[in-house]
Length: 128
Figure 1 (cartoon, rainbow, N blue to C red):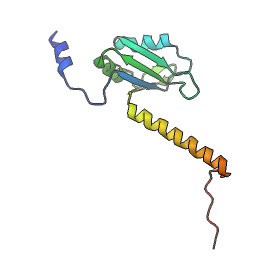
Figure 2 (figure 1 turned 60 degrees about the horizontal axis):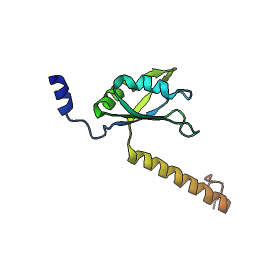
Figure 3 (figure 1 turned 135 degrees about the vertical axis):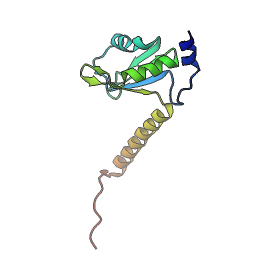
Figure 4 (figure 1 turned 135 degrees about the horizontal axis):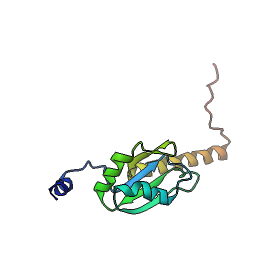
């Protein structure tokens, strides 16, 4: 009991949270397999496995308890699943939003290039 109390009172780094972002998953992994792997570290509230072309190989895992999430990150980062080494990170909404914003900017740029007939390649300046 004293060990549990000590564990609950120690400070965690600010990036630690209950939601994890998992990358480099096998494309054919099932939600059941995810629960089997991640459930060993504590009660899971939710798992979402990516299913679109852009999100395949990724998942979000949300634990009930922040200490369980930290334990999972500590033990599963680099864990081998079907000859792939997992990348387990704490979910960072600001970083995800920035990545989405960059994709939107790239798409907007591509549309403008099409509209004005620009191929997007940099060409050397003409010699004088």
